Image 1 (cartoon, rainbow, N blue to C red):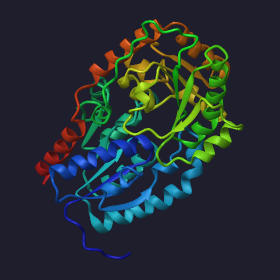
Image 2: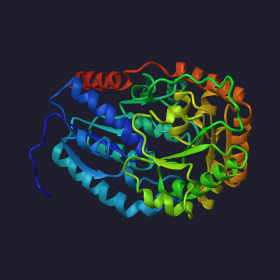
Image 3: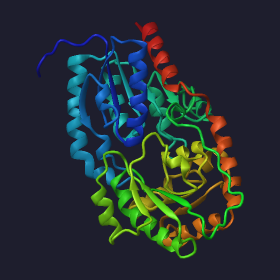
Length: 385
Protein backbone atom coordinates (compact mmCIF):
# COMPACT_ATOMS: atom_id res chain seq x y z
CA UNK A 1 0.00 0.00 0.00
CA UNK A 2 1.39 3.40 -0.97
CA UNK A 3 2.03 6.01 1.72
CA UNK A 4 0.87 9.57 1.12
CA UNK A 5 1.39 12.55 3.40
CA UNK A 6 -2.06 13.19 4.89
CA UNK A 7 -3.91 16.48 4.50
CA UNK A 8 -4.46 17.86 8.00
CA UNK A 9 -7.86 19.50 7.44
CA UNK A 10 -9.34 16.91 5.17
CA UNK A 11 -13.00 15.87 5.45
CA UNK A 12 -14.39 12.91 3.53
CA UNK A 13 -18.03 13.26 2.40
CA UNK A 14 -19.99 10.40 0.84
CA UNK A 15 -23.39 10.66 -0.87
CA UNK A 16 -24.96 8.03 -3.09
CA UNK A 17 -28.05 9.40 -4.80
CA UNK A 18 -29.33 12.58 -6.41
CA UNK A 19 -31.03 14.09 -3.36
CA UNK A 20 -28.00 13.29 -1.20
CA UNK A 21 -25.75 14.94 -3.78
CA UNK A 22 -27.91 18.07 -3.58
CA UNK A 23 -27.81 18.27 0.21
CA UNK A 24 -24.11 17.42 0.42
CA UNK A 25 -23.28 20.21 -2.03
CA UNK A 26 -24.92 22.71 0.30
CA UNK A 27 -23.01 21.36 3.27
CA UNK A 28 -19.68 21.54 1.41
CA UNK A 29 -20.28 25.21 0.62
CA UNK A 30 -21.11 25.87 4.27
CA UNK A 31 -18.03 24.02 5.57
CA UNK A 32 -15.70 25.93 3.26
CA UNK A 33 -17.36 29.22 4.17
CA UNK A 34 -16.85 28.46 7.87
CA UNK A 35 -13.21 27.39 7.38
CA UNK A 36 -11.56 28.09 3.99
CA UNK A 37 -8.61 25.85 4.93
CA UNK A 38 -10.77 22.70 4.88
CA UNK A 39 -10.14 20.31 1.98
CA UNK A 40 -13.06 18.20 0.87
CA UNK A 41 -12.67 14.74 -0.65
CA UNK A 42 -15.93 13.23 -1.85
CA UNK A 43 -17.91 10.46 -3.44
CA UNK A 44 -21.17 11.87 -4.71
CA UNK A 45 -22.60 13.42 -7.84
CA UNK A 46 -22.56 16.26 -10.34
CA UNK A 47 -23.46 18.97 -7.81
CA UNK A 48 -20.72 18.04 -5.36
CA UNK A 49 -17.96 17.50 -7.92
CA UNK A 50 -17.06 21.14 -8.73
CA UNK A 51 -17.04 22.05 -5.03
CA UNK A 52 -14.55 19.39 -3.92
CA UNK A 53 -10.77 19.50 -3.72
CA UNK A 54 -10.69 15.83 -4.71
CA UNK A 55 -13.60 13.96 -6.25
CA UNK A 56 -13.31 10.18 -6.17
CA UNK A 57 -16.40 8.88 -7.99
CA UNK A 58 -19.86 9.82 -9.28
CA UNK A 59 -21.93 7.32 -7.29
CA UNK A 60 -25.13 9.38 -7.42
CA UNK A 61 -25.68 8.61 -11.09
CA UNK A 62 -25.44 4.88 -10.31
CA UNK A 63 -27.84 4.88 -7.35
CA UNK A 64 -30.25 1.98 -6.84
CA UNK A 65 -33.33 1.74 -4.64
CA UNK A 66 -35.27 -1.05 -2.98
CA UNK A 67 -34.05 -4.44 -1.78
CA UNK A 68 -33.14 -6.35 -4.96
CA UNK A 69 -31.76 -3.69 -7.31
CA UNK A 70 -28.75 -2.72 -5.10
CA UNK A 71 -27.43 -6.27 -5.37
CA UNK A 72 -26.58 -5.53 -9.00
CA UNK A 73 -24.31 -2.71 -7.80
CA UNK A 74 -22.30 -4.84 -5.38
CA UNK A 75 -19.15 -5.21 -7.55
CA UNK A 76 -18.99 -1.42 -7.91
CA UNK A 77 -19.65 -0.90 -4.21
CA UNK A 78 -16.90 -3.34 -3.24
CA UNK A 79 -14.37 -1.53 -5.45
CA UNK A 80 -15.38 1.81 -3.95
CA UNK A 81 -15.22 0.45 -0.41
CA UNK A 82 -11.66 -0.72 -1.00
CA UNK A 83 -10.72 2.70 -2.34
CA UNK A 84 -12.31 4.48 0.63
CA UNK A 85 -10.62 2.09 3.07
CA UNK A 86 -7.22 2.90 1.59
CA UNK A 87 -8.06 6.59 1.61
CA UNK A 88 -8.91 6.57 5.30
CA UNK A 89 -5.75 4.68 6.16
CA UNK A 90 -3.39 6.88 4.14
CA UNK A 91 -5.05 10.27 4.59
CA UNK A 92 -6.55 9.91 8.09
CA UNK A 93 -9.30 12.50 7.50
CA UNK A 94 -10.33 14.69 10.43
CA UNK A 95 -13.95 13.56 9.90
CA UNK A 96 -16.23 11.48 7.73
CA UNK A 97 -19.67 12.80 6.82
CA UNK A 98 -22.18 10.56 5.07
CA UNK A 99 -25.44 11.67 3.49
CA UNK A 100 -28.50 9.38 3.40
CA UNK A 101 -27.99 6.19 1.25
CA UNK A 102 -27.91 3.75 4.17
CA UNK A 103 -26.96 0.54 2.33
CA UNK A 104 -23.58 1.91 1.27
CA UNK A 105 -22.96 4.52 3.93
CA UNK A 106 -23.38 2.38 7.02
CA UNK A 107 -20.38 0.41 5.75
CA UNK A 108 -18.43 3.65 5.33
CA UNK A 109 -19.32 4.53 8.91
CA UNK A 110 -18.09 1.13 10.07
CA UNK A 111 -14.72 1.71 8.44
CA UNK A 112 -14.46 5.14 10.06
CA UNK A 113 -15.36 3.72 13.49
CA UNK A 114 -12.70 1.02 13.15
CA UNK A 115 -10.09 3.70 12.46
CA UNK A 116 -11.31 6.06 15.21
CA UNK A 117 -12.33 8.75 12.73
CA UNK A 118 -15.24 10.88 13.98
CA UNK A 119 -18.30 10.37 11.80
CA UNK A 120 -21.49 12.34 11.24
CA UNK A 121 -24.71 11.56 9.40
CA UNK A 122 -26.19 14.50 7.48
CA UNK A 123 -29.75 13.75 6.35
CA UNK A 124 -30.20 10.53 8.28
CA UNK A 125 -32.05 7.67 6.53
CA UNK A 126 -35.71 7.20 7.43
CA UNK A 127 -35.13 4.18 9.62
CA UNK A 128 -38.29 5.04 11.56
CA UNK A 129 -40.26 3.88 8.49
CA UNK A 130 -38.77 0.38 8.27
CA UNK A 131 -36.12 -1.78 9.93
CA UNK A 132 -35.93 0.37 13.05
CA UNK A 133 -33.09 -1.76 14.44
CA UNK A 134 -30.84 0.26 12.16
CA UNK A 135 -31.27 3.24 14.50
CA UNK A 136 -29.17 1.47 17.13
CA UNK A 137 -26.44 0.80 14.57
CA UNK A 138 -26.42 4.45 13.57
CA UNK A 139 -26.20 5.51 17.20
CA UNK A 140 -23.11 3.35 17.68
CA UNK A 141 -21.38 4.54 14.52
CA UNK A 142 -21.89 8.33 14.66
CA UNK A 143 -21.02 11.20 16.95
CA UNK A 144 -24.02 13.17 15.77
CA UNK A 145 -26.90 12.79 13.30
CA UNK A 146 -28.57 15.70 11.54
CA UNK A 147 -32.17 14.72 10.94
CA UNK A 148 -34.58 16.57 8.68
CA UNK A 149 -37.98 16.13 10.35
CA UNK A 150 -38.91 17.55 13.76
CA UNK A 151 -40.12 14.23 15.23
CA UNK A 152 -36.87 12.34 14.54
CA UNK A 153 -34.67 13.38 17.52
CA UNK A 154 -37.10 11.76 19.97
CA UNK A 155 -37.18 8.59 17.87
CA UNK A 156 -33.36 8.26 17.78
CA UNK A 157 -33.04 9.08 21.46
CA UNK A 158 -34.87 5.82 22.26
CA UNK A 159 -32.01 3.95 20.55
CA UNK A 160 -29.19 5.98 22.12
CA UNK A 161 -28.62 8.22 19.10
CA UNK A 162 -27.40 11.80 19.31
CA UNK A 163 -29.76 13.35 16.73
CA UNK A 164 -30.47 17.05 16.25
CA UNK A 165 -33.05 18.81 14.10
CA UNK A 166 -31.68 22.08 12.70
CA UNK A 167 -34.33 22.38 10.00
CA UNK A 168 -34.87 20.72 6.66
CA UNK A 169 -32.02 21.51 4.22
CA UNK A 170 -34.45 21.86 1.32
CA UNK A 171 -35.32 25.24 2.84
CA UNK A 172 -31.83 26.43 1.90
CA UNK A 173 -32.44 25.95 -1.80
CA UNK A 174 -36.19 26.16 -2.38
CA UNK A 175 -37.77 29.42 -3.55
CA UNK A 176 -41.03 30.52 -2.04
CA UNK A 177 -44.38 29.69 -3.61
CA UNK A 178 -46.02 31.92 -6.19
CA UNK A 179 -49.57 33.19 -5.95
CA UNK A 180 -52.31 31.21 -7.67
CA UNK A 181 -55.77 32.51 -8.47
CA UNK A 182 -58.33 30.65 -10.58
CA UNK A 183 -61.09 33.25 -10.35
CA UNK A 184 -62.95 33.46 -13.66
CA UNK A 185 -61.11 30.44 -15.14
CA UNK A 186 -63.02 28.25 -17.60
CA UNK A 187 -61.72 24.82 -16.53
CA UNK A 188 -62.43 23.07 -19.84
CA UNK A 189 -60.55 25.58 -22.00
CA UNK A 190 -57.86 26.72 -19.56
CA UNK A 191 -54.22 26.05 -20.45
CA UNK A 192 -53.49 23.95 -17.37
CA UNK A 193 -49.85 23.31 -16.53
CA UNK A 194 -49.36 19.64 -15.65
CA UNK A 195 -45.91 18.70 -14.35
CA UNK A 196 -44.41 15.22 -14.25
CA UNK A 197 -41.63 14.05 -11.93
CA UNK A 198 -40.85 10.42 -12.77
CA UNK A 199 -38.00 10.03 -10.26
CA UNK A 200 -34.22 10.13 -10.37
CA UNK A 201 -33.28 6.42 -10.45
CA UNK A 202 -33.36 4.51 -13.69
CA UNK A 203 -35.83 1.90 -12.44
CA UNK A 204 -38.31 4.58 -11.38
CA UNK A 205 -37.90 6.45 -14.65
CA UNK A 206 -38.48 3.39 -16.82
CA UNK A 207 -41.58 2.38 -14.91
CA UNK A 208 -43.24 5.80 -14.60
CA UNK A 209 -42.41 7.80 -17.74
CA UNK A 210 -44.77 5.82 -20.03
CA UNK A 211 -47.53 5.82 -17.41
CA UNK A 212 -47.30 9.57 -16.80
CA UNK A 213 -47.29 10.35 -20.52
CA UNK A 214 -50.36 8.22 -21.22
CA UNK A 215 -52.15 9.85 -18.26
CA UNK A 216 -51.49 13.22 -19.88
CA UNK A 217 -52.94 12.04 -23.19
CA UNK A 218 -56.10 10.87 -21.44
CA UNK A 219 -56.38 14.22 -19.67
CA UNK A 220 -56.30 15.99 -23.04
CA UNK A 221 -59.63 14.44 -24.00
CA UNK A 222 -61.43 16.64 -21.45
CA UNK A 223 -58.89 19.46 -21.16
CA UNK A 224 -57.39 19.87 -24.66
CA UNK A 225 -55.30 22.93 -23.86
CA UNK A 226 -53.34 21.27 -21.06
CA UNK A 227 -49.59 21.75 -21.36
CA UNK A 228 -47.45 18.94 -19.90
CA UNK A 229 -43.89 19.36 -18.63
CA UNK A 230 -41.77 16.35 -17.79
CA UNK A 231 -38.93 17.45 -15.50
CA UNK A 232 -35.52 15.91 -16.18
CA UNK A 233 -32.35 16.09 -14.11
CA UNK A 234 -29.68 18.38 -15.63
CA UNK A 235 -27.53 15.40 -16.64
CA UNK A 236 -30.41 13.31 -18.06
CA UNK A 237 -30.43 12.07 -21.65
CA UNK A 238 -33.57 13.37 -23.39
CA UNK A 239 -33.43 10.59 -25.98
CA UNK A 240 -34.01 7.97 -23.27
CA UNK A 241 -37.24 9.68 -22.24
CA UNK A 242 -38.41 9.90 -25.83
CA UNK A 243 -37.74 6.19 -26.25
CA UNK A 244 -39.72 5.38 -23.12
CA UNK A 245 -42.69 7.41 -24.37
CA UNK A 246 -42.65 5.15 -27.42
CA UNK A 247 -44.28 7.56 -29.88
CA UNK A 248 -43.93 11.03 -31.30
CA UNK A 249 -44.81 13.31 -28.36
CA UNK A 250 -47.94 15.42 -28.48
CA UNK A 251 -47.32 19.06 -29.38
CA UNK A 252 -48.40 20.09 -25.86
CA UNK A 253 -45.77 17.87 -24.24
CA UNK A 254 -42.37 19.27 -23.23
CA UNK A 255 -39.18 17.77 -21.81
CA UNK A 256 -37.62 20.38 -19.51
CA UNK A 257 -34.55 20.81 -17.34
CA UNK A 258 -35.66 23.25 -14.69
CA UNK A 259 -33.26 25.61 -12.93
CA UNK A 260 -33.88 26.63 -9.36
CA UNK A 261 -37.47 25.29 -9.39
CA UNK A 262 -38.68 28.36 -11.29
CA UNK A 263 -40.78 26.40 -13.77
CA UNK A 264 -41.97 23.74 -11.35
CA UNK A 265 -43.51 26.25 -8.97
CA UNK A 266 -45.67 27.53 -11.85
CA UNK A 267 -47.38 24.15 -12.25
CA UNK A 268 -51.06 23.74 -11.42
CA UNK A 269 -50.77 20.04 -10.65
CA UNK A 270 -48.03 17.41 -10.55
CA UNK A 271 -47.70 13.68 -11.15
CA UNK A 272 -44.84 12.82 -8.79
CA UNK A 273 -42.77 9.78 -7.98
CA UNK A 274 -42.62 9.15 -4.24
CA UNK A 275 -39.47 10.58 -2.69
CA UNK A 276 -37.84 13.92 -1.94
CA UNK A 277 -39.69 15.51 -4.86
CA UNK A 278 -42.99 15.25 -3.00
CA UNK A 279 -41.66 17.36 -0.15
CA UNK A 280 -40.20 19.85 -2.64
CA UNK A 281 -43.63 20.16 -4.21
CA UNK A 282 -45.19 20.81 -0.82
CA UNK A 283 -42.69 23.57 -0.10
CA UNK A 284 -43.62 25.14 -3.44
CA UNK A 285 -47.31 24.77 -2.64
CA UNK A 286 -48.02 22.73 -5.78
CA UNK A 287 -50.75 20.06 -5.45
CA UNK A 288 -49.89 16.55 -6.63
CA UNK A 289 -50.77 12.92 -6.90
CA UNK A 290 -48.01 10.53 -5.79
CA UNK A 291 -47.23 7.35 -7.71
CA UNK A 292 -44.75 4.56 -7.19
CA UNK A 293 -44.08 1.34 -9.10
CA UNK A 294 -41.42 -1.09 -7.91
CA UNK A 295 -39.73 -4.18 -9.22
CA UNK A 296 -42.23 -6.92 -8.24
CA UNK A 297 -39.98 -8.83 -5.74
CA UNK A 298 -39.02 -5.50 -4.15
CA UNK A 299 -42.69 -4.65 -3.68
CA UNK A 300 -43.37 -7.96 -1.92
CA UNK A 301 -40.50 -7.37 0.51
CA UNK A 302 -41.50 -3.75 1.07
CA UNK A 303 -45.00 -4.78 2.14
CA UNK A 304 -43.44 -6.89 4.91
CA UNK A 305 -40.91 -4.42 6.31
CA UNK A 306 -42.38 -0.92 5.88
CA UNK A 307 -44.19 0.12 9.03
CA UNK A 308 -45.69 3.50 8.11
CA UNK A 309 -49.18 4.33 6.84
CA UNK A 310 -48.11 6.36 3.80
CA UNK A 311 -45.39 6.33 1.17
CA UNK A 312 -45.18 10.08 0.58
CA UNK A 313 -43.31 12.40 2.91
CA UNK A 314 -46.15 14.89 2.63
CA UNK A 315 -48.73 12.53 4.09
CA UNK A 316 -46.30 11.25 6.72
CA UNK A 317 -45.60 14.77 7.97
CA UNK A 318 -49.27 15.74 7.90
CA UNK A 319 -50.23 12.39 9.46
CA UNK A 320 -53.21 12.22 7.12
CA UNK A 321 -53.80 11.50 3.42
CA UNK A 322 -53.39 15.04 2.08
CA UNK A 323 -52.44 13.81 -1.39
CA UNK A 324 -53.61 10.74 -3.28
CA UNK A 325 -51.14 7.83 -3.31
CA UNK A 326 -51.22 5.29 -6.15
CA UNK A 327 -48.90 2.35 -5.51
CA UNK A 328 -47.81 -0.44 -7.84
CA UNK A 329 -50.84 -1.74 -9.80
CA UNK A 330 -52.93 1.28 -8.79
CA UNK A 331 -50.52 3.59 -10.64
CA UNK A 332 -52.15 3.40 -14.07
CA UNK A 333 -52.75 6.05 -16.73
CA UNK A 334 -56.49 5.86 -16.02
CA UNK A 335 -56.17 6.42 -12.26
CA UNK A 336 -53.64 9.24 -12.66
CA UNK A 337 -55.74 10.94 -15.32
CA UNK A 338 -58.86 10.60 -13.18
CA UNK A 339 -57.17 12.35 -10.26
CA UNK A 340 -55.77 15.07 -12.53
CA UNK A 341 -59.08 15.77 -14.24
CA UNK A 342 -60.90 15.85 -10.93
CA UNK A 343 -58.59 18.66 -9.82
CA UNK A 344 -58.89 20.60 -13.07
CA UNK A 345 -62.70 20.37 -12.97
CA UNK A 346 -62.73 22.00 -9.52
CA UNK A 347 -59.97 24.64 -9.15
CA UNK A 348 -61.06 25.28 -5.57
CA UNK A 349 -59.78 21.80 -4.70
CA UNK A 350 -56.38 22.87 -6.03
CA UNK A 351 -56.37 26.00 -3.89
CA UNK A 352 -57.49 24.14 -0.77
CA UNK A 353 -54.77 21.50 -1.17
CA UNK A 354 -52.21 24.20 -1.87
CA UNK A 355 -53.04 25.84 1.45
CA UNK A 356 -52.65 22.54 3.33
CA UNK A 357 -49.27 21.89 1.72
CA UNK A 358 -47.91 25.31 2.61
CA UNK A 359 -48.73 24.69 6.28
CA UNK A 360 -46.10 21.92 6.21
CA UNK A 361 -43.42 24.39 5.14
CA UNK A 362 -43.80 26.25 8.43
CA UNK A 363 -43.14 23.06 10.42
CA UNK A 364 -39.70 22.43 8.89
CA UNK A 365 -37.66 25.24 10.39
CA UNK A 366 -35.85 28.17 8.80
CA UNK A 367 -33.26 28.52 6.00
CA UNK A 368 -29.57 28.32 6.95
CA UNK A 369 -29.68 24.62 7.80
CA UNK A 370 -26.38 23.70 6.11
CA UNK A 371 -24.61 26.61 7.78
CA UNK A 372 -25.85 25.57 11.21
CA UNK A 373 -24.85 21.95 10.57
CA UNK A 374 -21.35 22.93 9.39
CA UNK A 375 -20.79 25.09 12.45
CA UNK A 376 -22.01 22.29 14.73
CA UNK A 377 -19.66 19.74 13.14
CA UNK A 378 -16.63 22.02 13.28
CA UNK A 379 -17.35 22.99 16.88
CA UNK A 380 -17.71 19.34 17.82
CA UNK A 381 -14.40 18.49 16.15
CA UNK A 382 -12.73 21.37 17.97
CA UNK A 383 -13.88 20.02 21.34
CA UNK A 384 -12.80 16.52 20.41
CA UNK A 385 -9.32 17.75 19.49
